[in-house]
Image (cartoon, rainbow, N blue to C red; front, side, top):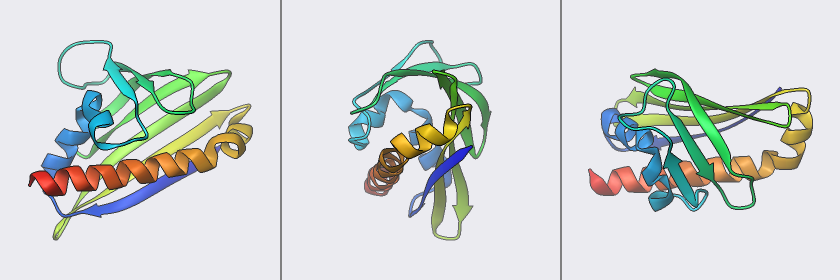
Amino acid sequence: MTLISAVITIAAPPQRVFEELCDVERWPEWTPSMTRVQRLDDGPLAVGSRARVRQPKLFPAVWRVVALDTQGFTWFTENLGVQTIGRHSVEARKDGCQVTLTIRFTGLLARLMGRLYGKRCHEYLTMECEGLRKRCEERC
């Protein structure tokens, strides 16, 4: 297993940040780590929701939400025997919230994927944290 994460404090209400995170099709508006996110179903993000994600220098992937609660969501994709689990969580803080984004590779080739893509994944998670912070703080 390989775990990659990024954490940021955002001076915005946790609910506002959570809403922005759940609006996955708009992610390319605030982070250069996403070129396109297309929902494959209708309605609000829910367990079972799927989205096709296109990112620079990575293969397109279809992600499926496997857990959703008031503090974030977890989604999952699988390719070449490697399961990739992404968790997006928001935790209330005194002056806003703390956002933690994680990617976890599991499976037979997880360590190899971590070596090949770990640095890029960390860069993308950091871009996403910064973009989310800027988006939410400007709109509040």
